[in-house]
Structures are given as structure tokens and as C-alpha cells.
Amino acid sequence: MALMKVFSRANLSFESGDGATLYDKDGKDYIDFTAGIGVNSLGHSNKTVKKAIFAQSEKLIHASNLYQNEAQEKLAKKICELLGREMYAFFCNSGCEANECAIKLARKYGATKFENKKYEIITLSNSFHGRTMATLQATGQDKFHPDCFAPYMDGFKFYDTIDEIIENIGDKTVAVMLELVQGEGGIKPLEVESVRKLARVLRDKGLLLITDEVQCGVYRTGEFVTSQLYGVKPCIITFAKGMAGGIPIGCCMSVGDWFGTGDHGSTFGGNHLAMSVGLAVLKKLEKLKKDGDLDKTIANFTKKLDKMVAKYPNLFIKRTGLGLMQGLVLKEASNLGKIYESAMKNGVLILKSGKDTIRFLPPLNISKAEIYEGFKRLEKALEEF
Ligand SMILES: *Cc1c(COP(=O)(O)O)cnc(C)c1O
Image 1 (cartoon, helix red, strand yellow):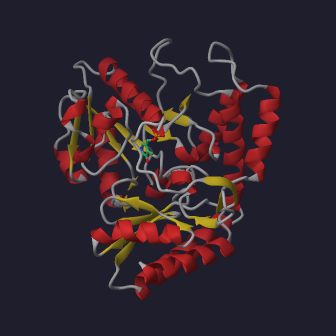
Image 2 (tube, rainbow, N blue to C red):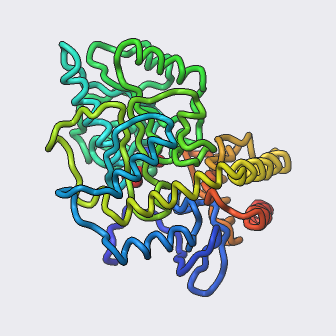
């Protein structure tokens, strides 16, 4: 094989998609409750996405960051409008890059705004922040730190709870980075009151709250960002996955423009294609929210999940999550792989999260019929596995 074997791939490949339905090369259809791990926020072959790609590619795909780029300014303005705040944007191509930018930005802030240099970033033990060397070290989960990749970067600490984080904010601490809903660690929404308390503590000390909204942002949990749902105003917010409907994008938003010229950069980041598709996607999602369709879909999907928990009390402990970032927690972790396989065989795609949670990240515009069909297939998979 010509590919590095870093992924454990299912024996399945897709040729096309339409909405929340994918087709393999034999024409067999699958209901997609994964949206490419939260990427295809408007589903597959979406008209808005296709039109934006086509229109922009007819004009210009990339011209580099050596020149003015109105498309970046437009998308940055749209993001600020949806956040309801003035912030500065840096565009890149992925979630880990957005977090790298956040980490560098926090270090610059910590080195220049205090008498003693502050550089330490605290995260949660159960977190996931990416696969680059810095974001691996920001990721608290031990399984991401095998000895073969050592030495890791200094300047990161993790604790199990927000209260412990607050207790351990030290003289070197500059920022706390959190996923408000932990995506890879088992779809765990953090407790609202603890997050608010932490935000107050950090604000009073002049330190930074960073929310990694790579997975839980861009309407995934029902609001544009999950921090709006939590009623906190992070100093830095990172985005990626769902922001451009499948075109690679990453974005770091900050209350301060602390970098100087040359401090950071990206060759591909912020190219005209990603920016115009991102803008079209955000406008479409904003409308989906304003028209009430997103909230209806969330209510419907949640009801279906609650029904599954009620119907299979010996399989599931509970539903967990917010909006269309949901999980079903299994009583027996050993069933996770088997259910995942059985679902695939029965034509519905789900994700795993943590050791014991089935994860659902459907397209945000998934139809009622697709939700109905997906859960019908999932029930069949549960009966069979
Ligand atoms: C997926 C994810 C990342 C990493 O994003 P990549 O685009 O794979 O680099 C970082 N943080 C969170 C919360 C994620 O879910």
C-alpha cells in the first residue's frame, strides 16, 4: 500500500453523496450521522457550497498573503457579526493550526503584557486539541503522549476539573484552553457555572480564556459558538471543521491583535476559495438558525436519541451532548466497536468518542426523512449486533 497506516479505515469507500446520504461504488446508500467528523455542516453536494466553489474557482483560487484579500476581510467581518463582538481573525487550514495560532498568540501576550514572562497554558486532562507537537501537548489525554514522540514541548499543564485548574493558576500561567463540549473525550459538555467562574477568575487576573470550538463551534451546538450558549466571552476562539462545508479552513479569532508582522503566517491559509465558501456556508447556516429549522432539527434528533435510551435501557446509560453534537453512553464499553460495525452494515454511519460513547455529528441541515431512516437503521443494527 502507498499510504501510511495511521488510520484504522473501514472496508468501505464512497463515490458520491447527497444531503445526509452517501453512496458507495455499488450504489448502496448510507445515512450519514457523521458529516465527515463535523465537517460537512450543510451535507454532501450542497447547492450553496457547490455554487460558491464554482463561482470562486472561475475567478481566483489563491493569490497568497503577500497581497490584500477582501475575501478574508468579508469572512472576518461576518464572523464578528455572528459573535456580536469585534475580534481579529487569522485564517489557516485546520483545527490544529488554529490552535497553534492561539498558543503562539497567548505566549506573545504573556511575554509582552506582564512584568514577568508568562507562558504556561492549562487544559483539561480529557481534552483533545490536535496532532501537531504543540497541540499534542495541549491535549491532556495520556494516550496521545507515547514515549516515541518525546521530548514534548514545555509549558503545558492539565488537570481533571475546572476547580483544579482555578486552584493551580500560577505565576507563569497565561491562558486556559477548553473545549466547552469535549468531542474526542466522550461528548462531555463542561458545567456552565464552572466555566463562568473560570472566565471571571481569568478576567480578573488579566489572563486568557481560549475556547477550542473546532468541533463544537459553527452552530454545531445550536448557537454560532458554544461560548454564546455558555454566556462567556473568550479572549480567543478557534474554529475549523464545519466552517466551510468541506473545504479545508481554520480560523483563530482574538480580542487582541498581539502579533507583529512576521510573527505568524500560512501559505494556503485564507485563500480566496476557502474564504468565499466559508462566507456562503455561514450565511446559509445563519438563515437555517433564524428560520427556526436548526432548532427544530435539534429537537427532533434529541427526541430520537432519548427514545433510544428509553427503548434499550440495558445498552445505554444516557444521552449526552448539546445541539447536533450528541452521544449515547454505553453501559459496556466493549460494545462500542460492535455497534459501530453493525450500524455500518445496516447503512447508517456513526462515530465513536472516548471509550464508551457513540457520537452523532449529522449535517446541520439533515432532513426529517433522513433522521427517521437513520434511526430505523440504527435500531436494526442494535437488534442485530
Ligand atoms: C478535530 C479537532 C481538532 C483538530 O483539528 P484538525 O483539523 O484535525 O487539525 C482540534 N480540536 C478539536 C476540539 C477537534 O475536535
